[in-house]
Length: 119
Image 1 (cartoon, helix red, strand yellow):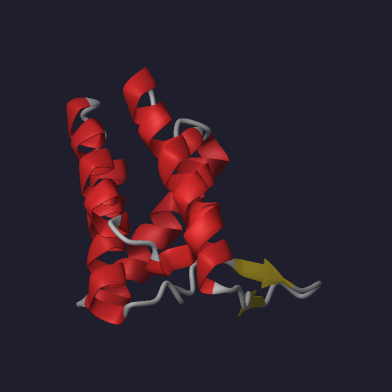
Image 2 (image 1 turned 90 degrees about the vertical axis):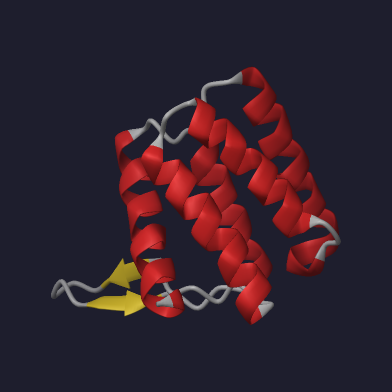
């Protein structure tokens, strides 16, 4: 994220999830606040993925989104099994440097997976 206040907010959310996990009180509200920064930055990808993330957390009370895959030697992809907390932390850390090309691609993977799970 580009705005300093957004990065401070993002760091506080990461710290909250590291300490309390996805069940942290007020997590969805904090993600909603972070989404407001994405709106100010006019970044539709981050705006969308943050909205889908808090909707998913509210609806499923989990973050078991299959958005990360590993590839074998033959090019076949297999979903990685990751704890909910680690999965959310990975996504949040991608947001810290969301302009990086590879990070952006992974954020898009999360967006797609979240949309498929929710709708």
